[in-house]
Image (cartoon, rainbow, N blue to C red; front, side):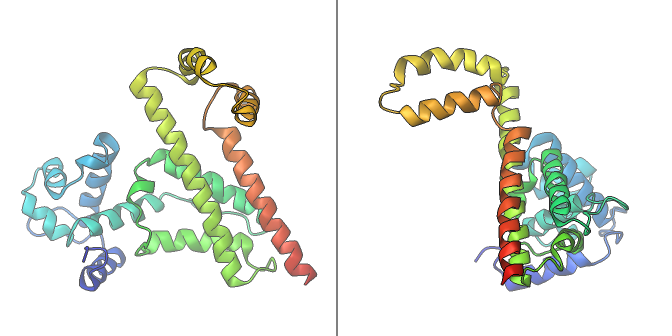
Length: 254
């Protein structure tokens, strides 16, 4: 049984998430908040693979055992980090509008895309069964608001928002991956095509893959050689919103 599945560990994590993060940890003089901030800074600088109780403690200049006084285990640390990332969303006056549901969901998509681009590790560390800390719950409350009263059932509201967030997370993940590949190879997208295209033209038979070749050429021209970015994100979001709109129309007609 993993820590995520362990009922006792899950209860401890939830209690920690919803408790005071200004509480000091042992005799360190440091607060839970200090440990969470250090964990996020570590992952931002060195990647997810660098995260451990020992590395967090080292970053703060305390004994490794002090980190275990801050959280019952790594799953609790991850939950705290994810919830803290969500705390930065929707400062006062920037909440998604509830006046126009489509505009409101567009704002939700853009805010989540920006969040995942700022915290590339978030999609990887967010568990499928999130323990739902206070900031994540507040985020969810604000993001459901545009759909309230438009004619969907509560279940349909939840699923519509979930699909939008899934699309946005995946789009941002691909953008982050492309950016990482540009950094590691030293090639921007145009330079990548310069190297790849001569080989592809030599080995790919357009008679065997006529649709793929035709569509790929059109897509490359439209995106001006870039891979994942603004245009791909906008297309996906708009088509999903079209689908939600069609469902709303059907519900109102029914």
